[in-house]
Length: 205
Image 1 (tube, rainbow, N blue to C red):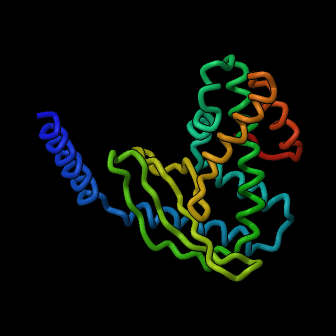
Image 2 (image 1 turned 90 degrees about the horizontal axis):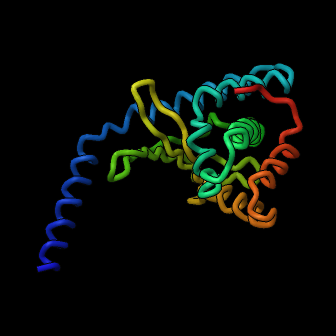
């Protein structure tokens, strides 16, 4: 009886997943990532001060990254133990850290060669993954970059980036958990690290 129940349940899950897949229109999310790439190309092509370029990329990231959602995920179980002041500072510092990292990486890649070739939705319909490839400027080899998005009535927001299948958010979650563990379980340990990493001036969210 239990096996029959599980078989029916599995069948219903498959039907549900198929329904999501059939109703999902991939083109809007593909166009969204293409549009972002084109905006970065415009910024990178302009002959202007590096600081102005960084500020323009920072503005673009502010409009497209779901900072608080990502910050809650990377802090993991420690989010619940943090004070309101620590949560606020963590989101702010983490946003600054992401802007610094992404600004440097984005401007170092020739995004005119980006290939946006597919998109799919998770079985629950919560996350959209857009698959792209860019050329590594050092090796000349293609690098697979997947963009994980959430969709709302206001448009799309980026919640994670996977480089060659490795999640940036998951890697940071593990790194921050180790820092907090070494710091006696205190969130202050990772805040201190982020303060040090974000000394360069960047735009506020």
